Length: 449
Ligand code: PFF
Image 1 (cartoon, helix red, strand yellow):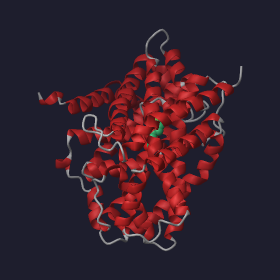
Image 2 (cartoon, rainbow, N blue to C red):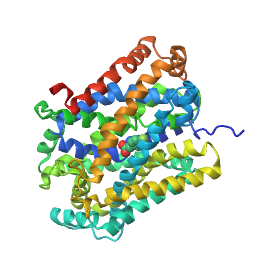
Image 3 (cartoon, helix red, strand yellow):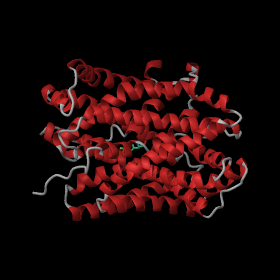
Image 4 (tube, protein in one colour):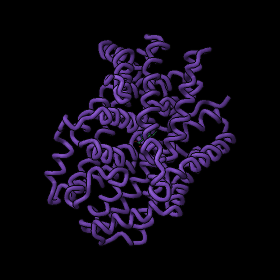
């Protein structure tokens, strides 16, 4: 039998897991969802969920993956044989399938900007002109479907060839450069005229704006940015050697993620107010704001090009993890099957994403429960499927795994105080499932009756 593949270096796992976590969620989704849900208070609740539920759940997925060293369906089967728990793996497959279908639409928008910056046609426009160019493109079926296809194609090629290791090495350089570019962007954004208004919006919590919908959105956002509840992190941690410290890895990923969320907020909100744009513009927010900021700096378009390339890279590393989860389950380590399934699943995801791609154009008036296809797919994934997955994972670990096994998983690679272990254990056992249910029920209006 072939030896189980492992990450190529000590940091390989952290880089790959951080690559899955950091992507559109922190950079594109966070600013627009915060913008639609009142800003500061949303950030506050998001941070709370990320630290108290996200971190323990991320660690729970790591423990399942490393303990079993298998794909997301077999892992649950190994721990709880003869039960239905492995359906959690199938739930993860369904979630990542639907998720990637609309994720790739936004990834496509980045590719569109890449072409635009390369041809130099994005330089020197007014805020209205930028918005018009962008809206013209995303409402055009030919353009939006083509770029969505290109994004999926890149994802399929990398996953089919199993070259994630190369990508993992590239992340080592790309991630720090992305942070540097963010700093440049923030310096420009913080020297724009309406900076105080932007910072107040982002950091001053006005809890009166916090609806039950906003609390659910914050929960969904925190799971989304950490890639939790889909078993993607189970898959990635199945390639981790025993000596690696899982709590350290989880902590680094959570803090990196929070760092990027804050960077994105600092880059976007001062600019939103300075260029007279609306913070609640929705999914188009980042794409309408960014060109303005870069346009107002020396060598702006060059910086913009660099930023777009890194942003695309960050989004692709998240997309790989979504497809990898499914391919790992279907191919079970067989290289030939890996290629076949990557193409079959990847192209099916492309097809499923077409209505989402058209939601900003010809299908923008087709509404299901008052939402476009794109919004329904996003709502289902972020606010229903991911919290449900997280709920079950959180019950599964304390219920089906021995406490001694759990302790030794957390303890290997570094020593963990018993007290902290217990805090983690009881959060998973009681706090997280109850909190997730409360939030879900609140949105269903169950408490209002
Ligand atoms: N965490 C990714 C992001 O923030 O862009 C999105 C994601 C990837 C969610 C993988 C879920 C997942 F399984």
